[in-house]
Image: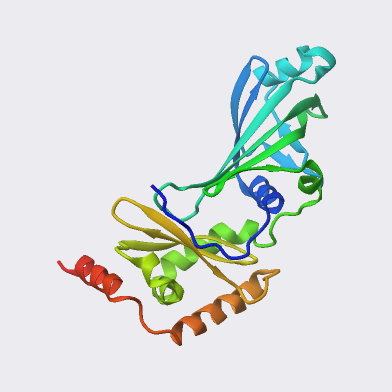
Length: 244
């Protein structure tokens, strides 16, 4: 069970949806008489259309070709999993409702007519114009590498960053891990025995590329170094976990 979260400025729903769509590897498709899963088979157009490559014997392709006007109603579902192993690893789900039309080379073009993004804070209906105009976060494609590198190679930095978290948010914490990063800030997952919560550490200004992200992270770490050490409860938890 997740508890109350501390959120600072972050990407809007449309940008978050486009970032998710641009980086997830698989999708689940439900259409008239068809329910299929595809891995590494979709591409995204500038305006948010989805081009899906399907086998010639696909039930989905048959549904499109046999539907009136070759435009069956369909729903595409995308799940965004955190790169770092954490409790409840799915960070968000994106549903696109709309219609398929045949495209070249046994591909299908999907145009959304409804976009719903569900995160831990709840579900949001994303406006179609906003969705079409939005662009993925500039760090989206690098996020997985950045987070796994931070967790695996710099656990000391993650620990130092907990100094920027309110003491009450760290109460009874058993583990802290990097959950997400975007141009606006870094999100930490704070796990306890039965619950967890997420805390966002905002950057002083947005980062438009990895080099700027490096500077923003150094600024957070400098700020953390100037902040008193983490609460005694978390120190005790670390000491207990290190005891043979």
